[in-house]
Length: 99
Image 1 (cartoon, rainbow, N blue to C red):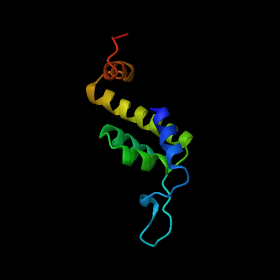
Image 2: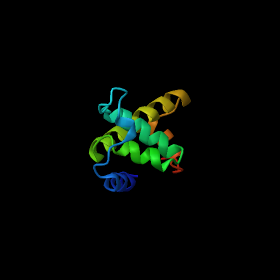
Image 3: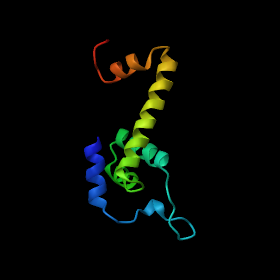
Image 4: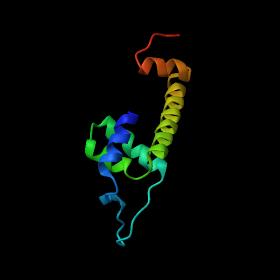
């Protein structure tokens, strides 16, 4: 996944994203959590254009942090919903045997 982030960012370079333009014509800045949410949802929908766009909003390091934070929060929420431990849910989601 991080290789895709680096590749996407490298491909885009300094190109402006259409989503960054606000109605006033200025640039809209996105925070790392917006970028992570947009990037992960685009990955889930296999939408390369949206992935590239979201990856251009923040630095690769910030996007990586945001994706990690999103994964942690999602795992905790899913574990609570299932009444199971985050470790067990993570292993199940990844198709790993129970520890």
